[in-house]
Image (cartoon, rainbow, N blue to C red; front, side, top):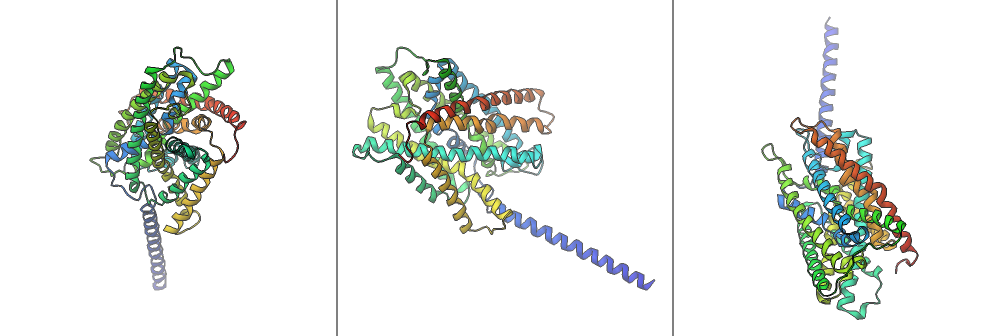
Length: 460
């Protein structure tokens, strides 16, 4: 009996030790995860103010897309074009509200990244791959387009200010933009980016104002007497409508970073993060619709179907004001690039630490981010087809993250009881509209790219 008791004690001690070891390992694992979260770009700081989310969202939204809206109306016509812009604003405003609400739908948990919300609502495999692929496509495509936009805008600025420099190829201006991003990409986290984002948001509003005022002045003196669409054949009109839908979808691409922006806000039981976030979103979206409609309507009114795919290119006088506006665009897309790239940095660094056991460090950040900027910059140098890129990428993935996925996740979630069935029907409408754009817009974008390739020389 004594021997049995001794054996039992040894077994109990072994179990206690095993439990203790398991608790220690679990605590160590939790500490490691906590330390990693405190280092990653999205979750390192949670002391943002509500107005930070305003200019982050403005920076993400009012970018290259707004300059292409007059061109989109010229492809669709007055009524269809304006209707498409307003309808897209309403749909994406609603889907943005859904994402903000779902950020803390589960008590005690925050979905700091878009794909984390997808994993919870649709399962670890389907949710992860459905959302992650679409989100990364949007973010990477945005950085590529911003490289192109930055280079084109800077070239336009110098062409106007220093005509003797007109022979300098656009490639060199894009390279200069990329070099700037090499340095800015070392910004540790989203909150540290606030001054750059604030300046970018201010620039976007300013150059939108310049585009509107200058278009109106030019339109008063010499505006078209007839407004029609750009193409004259049925096939051409059809493809142009598809491209225009993609351009408009691109203009509402901020959803791919909204949960990451909300992750930077503090949250308590009394004041959950959705309250300051929604306050910032309403402010941002009010600015968005004013800028979008003003630029789109004034640009098409002034130039009609001859408007360029970047309305600032159509503006010529006064040259100094147009030059300043192009410089504003350049400054803006510097910040926009970083807003879209920061979640990508977060994903890359998290993967390297989790899967490949790299140690979080400045060296890891330097190498990973530099390689990413170099890759997207090289692609931008090779494929600078502005209008075609907007249409292609806009339909390929932007509609998914802004129009479709929020509604899908909402329908999959266990919604609080106070939400009515109206939200379910609204989600279905958003999904249907998004699917239509996603299926048609890439067709027009591919056609535009093919036509551009015929006359384009690489690294020109």
